[in-house]
Structures are given as structure tokens and as C-alpha cells.
Amino acid sequence: MTLSIRNQLPGTVTEVHAGQVMATVRVRLDGGPHLLAAITLEAAEQLSLAPGKPVHALVKSTEVALAARQAEGLSIRNRFPGTITEVRPGEVMASVKIATAAGELTAVITRDAVADLGLFAGSEVIALIKATEVSLAAP
Image (cartoon, rainbow, N blue to C red; front, side, top):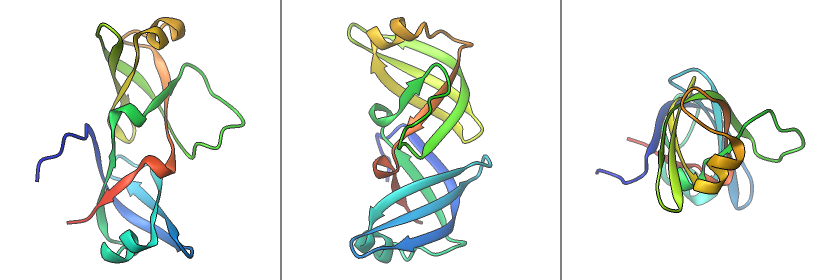
């Protein structure tokens, strides 16, 4: 199956914490860092998620936020420092590609945000992804 989701990061499950309705799943990405996903317990069970299981973490590019500097006091669990490799501006939105230890990430943010943050190829940024915006796929 081919997906339109730009950010498809391969990794291996290292922890699963099941609640009554949701589960948090820690994934060690092939690039090295960890990522946290918060998915329904039903989905975790259907995917048979357990430590050692290979998965792909899927994140829509519209769900990746960017920070120009370290931000404190945020509830966002997934923070990947990186360097912008490409900024492709459109009329209203811009596509921004970032090289991180987790792999290449694409963020789609407003053109105004690109200008306000002064982003350009070579800029250092932090890609921010809420755990609830991560989907998991298992082979």
C-alpha cells in the first residue's frame, strides 16, 4: 500500500504501556532516537505490539510543528533537532524538509510562520510532534 503521508519512519517497539482506552508505545527509530505514540488500546492489540516488533511511525506533514529554538514547558513529547534542507514556499503554506537523527521529516506550515521564524535552508530547528498525532503501521 502506498500512502500520502510524507513522514514514514521505520523503527522497533521498545515499550508498550496499556491503559483502559489508550496505549503509549515507545519506538526506537532506525536513525537512533525514540518516538512516543499514543494510540487506542484496540489498535495496539490488533497490531500485536510488543517490544521487538518492527513498525513504521506515520506522521502527516501538517502535524509537524517547528521551533526556531529550544522551547520549555511544552507537553509535546517528540522533539527532534535538525537542520532545514529545503523550504518550498507556496501562496499560503510552505513545505519544509528537515534532516534529523530520526530521518528526514517534512513539515507543512504557513508561509507567514516561515517568515516570522526566519527559516531558510541551513537553519537549525526543532521538529515537534504530539504523541497523539503519530500512527503506527506493522508489517
